[in-house]
Image 1 (cartoon, rainbow, N blue to C red):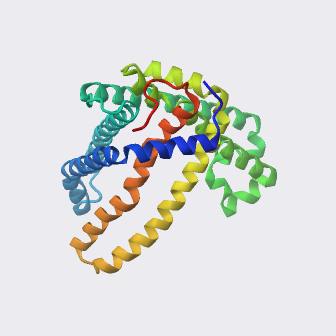
Image 2: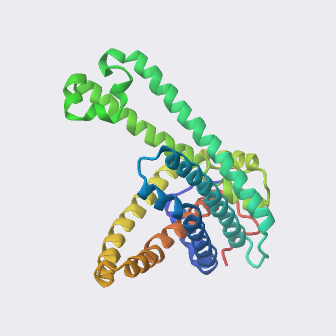
Image 3: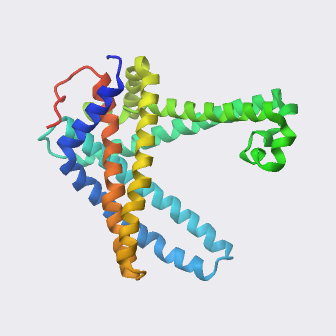
Length: 293
């Protein structure tokens, strides 16, 4: 276990991507096609029916259930694919273990869901306590909402309360980034050890990220900002070109969406899958599977 540097994390991330981009392209591209087809089959008719009867509450409730089911299936697919990518990258030449990947992936997804829910509960409790303490200044729980910053509420709660609100929301963002950072390498740990137990991955991730936790938060923030800038710039350039080529036709619009996904969003997903391994290799002791080739 070593203290991570941001430079080492970037280097390891792109080293993993460079060595495994073809494998990742195959797995991620296949997953996107599969999820897209499932989305069309599960949700296509539902959205068409809702467009024809937008005020039907039964359709809305049915659509919500189908969306949740689709999100669950998509999460299982992508978490399973991520396990295949991480294991294949850390142990090149090994045959894909689909049975393990599609058990370990959903197990990790469930573990992370529990942690995120717990984190939001902590945030809610802290917000509630601060509301009780500063209730008069903030005007109750509503003073902690974004609506309080609108023109009507800003003068009512005062400059000091607005400053406190800004500090609180920044603190919430930092806290959630910290939680994500502490459990960032749980997946690579499970892939390295070929375990299905998310407790093992989450516990080891907590231990490994301890000495570098705030460096990881900074790296995660820089990476997220960089990806957002890339999406905005690339989306504007590619979208503008494809929009002009499509000429407003339905077929052209569909082809434009496919090209946009391939040129803009697919690289983002591949880099996002590489980042946890990059952090893991930057902080974990070197083991037998430390060469990404």
